[in-house]
Image (cartoon, rainbow, N blue to C red; front, side, top):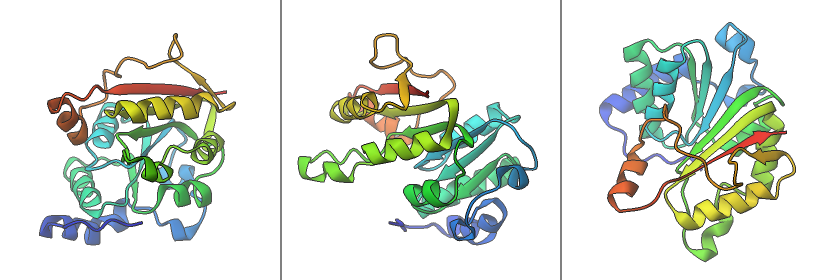
Amino acid sequence: MRREGRLTPAQRRAVDALLPKYGLDPAQGAFDFTRIFGRNTKRTLEIGFGNGETLAELARIHSEEDFLGVEVHRPGVGRLLMTLEAESLKNVRVICADAVEVLGRCVPDASLDAVLVYFPDPWPKQRHHKRRLLQPEFVALVACKLKSGGSFLLATDWPDYAEYMLAVLAQSSDFINAAPSDGYVPRPTERPLTKFERRGLRLGHPVRELIFVRR
């Protein structure tokens, strides 16, 4: 569901004024990425981008590539929109909607080169595990949207969730673990530290990274 949070006046102005410029509306149906970005290049989708710092940094580093971000927390959407406008980052589009809905209705099959899920809600209580984003059905949906050889990158600072994600992905016949030992991979050097990651590190939480490749 959409999470309103508390929008600052600047974030509210950004959502109202800039979402029409940088946003995509799921109600319009399937996205035509070539038309949207005006080119055909590598495309990365980040699910749950928080305040958008990772997405904006990747867009800065890789101006030759295109990026999409899905987030239901409107303050984070507003903050990313302000960054995009301030830095004139034209290779990012933002969707304020449920990720499963967007993947199912709007993203064409085999149209993405990478999907990122960094520090999703771990839902640590056993009775809430069914609410976790990483479920077999979601993994199958991501696989449909990735090109052959595309990458599914994930990170969490909850060891239990890391083991859970590793187990769910290992069961999928659509992916191959990029880690030589079928475990975790080193942290990608170009991925900036996120707010949630910094908080987890302060609390002594170990960060686990996964990369799975679409068969």
